[in-house]
Image (tube, rainbow, N blue to C red):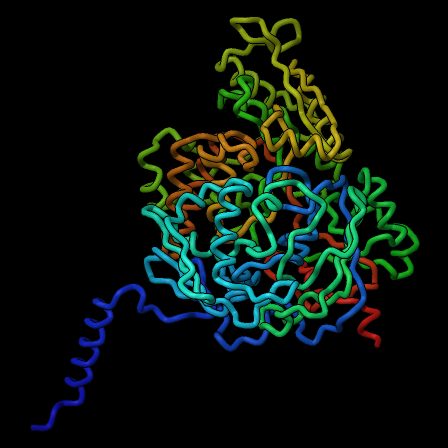
Length: 609
């Protein structure tokens, strides 16, 4: 009897499906990359990341600058302040490396760096990495799985606190080149990607004692650069390593093109900008729209020596605003926080301080599909929010909410009345031209902590508006070191802060910014002290869902809860990324979803040789 080909094929398919169903999770095949949702965009044989130029000339130098100072070369601990150029999303992870790196042209996908391949089951209950056989430390010793195990424990025990560390149940070196992470019950689907992005240190060259102290002695790494010169608080120079192991990897082609990276520090923003005008550093991402429109009328621009470019981005704009510390009694009542939004006249601020160049921010994921603004809650969102019926305002739920803007006069009477009515509900009344507590007579007063003159100018404008209704806001400017130390310990009433670099795939960083656990963890970014079961639940939802549609619903639900909590008086965002740079630099024809990528730029002078 001749078997039917169709029947044979069907039986074979059924058999394969049955075998696959009973195989253990360890039967998963190694992959070249991993994505938060779905599959990585780039194939296994990709040549380079799409926003890099693999033919970029090598040589020359790039100089960056910052306002403030530094007193440590360890950015991974709470002690001290380290310079950005060592480990930074924008300027590069230059000294240390991670197992995998992001393709910044995708929402959240990683490809191998120290790890040659990655294996992860569908349920993401564990992840295994195969270390690249060529990966080496700066002293020539090979990178091993034991280094990865050591690094995780080092960061967990002595590094900046991260709530997700506790979700890793076990990490084991199965061989010299294979390391296996097992995750505990309730771990998020993002956890494998977070593990893949941890910095890795050499066990033989970095002791626990060295790592845990603030020091100007750099820790050894495997990255393309090493610290060549340090002037404490003033400057740091990184030199490209001639023996860097990874320069031919697909994720590194077109990156790390400069022989030298220099970072200069200046005492204030005026000195900083004057230094840029003189050519003391090369690259400046402009945040001041007034200066962007009127401040670049100096000879170097007119002569074409300084170039001005706008870079579009495809990511959320982030939340920029006055953050209220709800740990302080004055901001504990949500009605008080909501009222303070009515006293800020955005139209007046925008026209008088920024020449009308900014757009108003309303969402924590502004300008993306993740924003709840202008969108009624979907059925999926309603389902997620149902256990917390009081967590979201009706106007936020139906998509009609907008933050109060003001009429441009600086003293919008209608908004003032609405704000004062909310204060009265919360027990604050106006007496003798001042807002006081109805029971105690204590005046409504708080401090706005600022670091830069730009923030001081903005805070003073808000101070004047608050004074019109009888609220006393003292503006206090401190130096960079004191500012960041006070933020780490939540020692402030109100700050102006910008939660920038928002992602199309928000994940555990939302826990670090908004969870109840982070509210009690010094050094976290939960500056507002938000502690709400609804927030925790929405964060857990976005971390656990699989499909993109349900993920978007979870993020929008989180957005609605945050907006309704009035933790921030929202300010504004720029419609594009503004970058000024000296013509000593060149860059690829386009940036990534995140905008300009200076790690892929090169020396224009080097290209002439």
